[in-house]
Length: 195
Image (cartoon, rainbow, N blue to C red):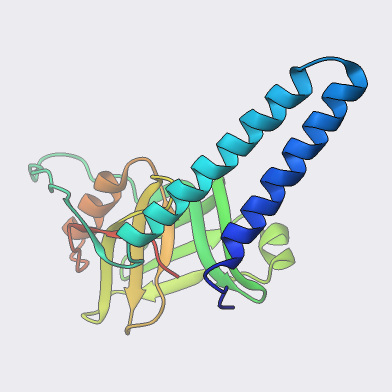
């Protein structure tokens, strides 16, 4: 849905006028300036969020590189193998569009030749029409670090040029290192979250 360029500004202005009007009315009615101060603070906060949001949207294109490159750690062959199952959050396609599940509702499993990302419990996944995604290891799969809209970190998996799926974790380096050591095609260039 395209939004006309002036519409958000008009809505912000209308909301500010309404908040200030209600604040002024309540100040006169109760003889307390607290309502007017609260209305002014709300107006300033809304305007700041609007300006910040527009600035962030202008400077970042979804799916583009962030300019940050993660560094793979070097592990010795004598070290025990790293975890092959991680618990975190996920962003997956479902019947009702994309579904974002927070930690600890998502599980990323690394199998011998595939990667599986799903939401648990199955009842919750079924409510949103989300099924587990299993990606076989191949040359047309791309695994990369991702940065979400609010600074969330994670791992993106894209196959055959399709829309990526995301696993949100505070340790993307560990997940990527384990996948790279299991011969998955890993790109270390971080990208922005995109549907």
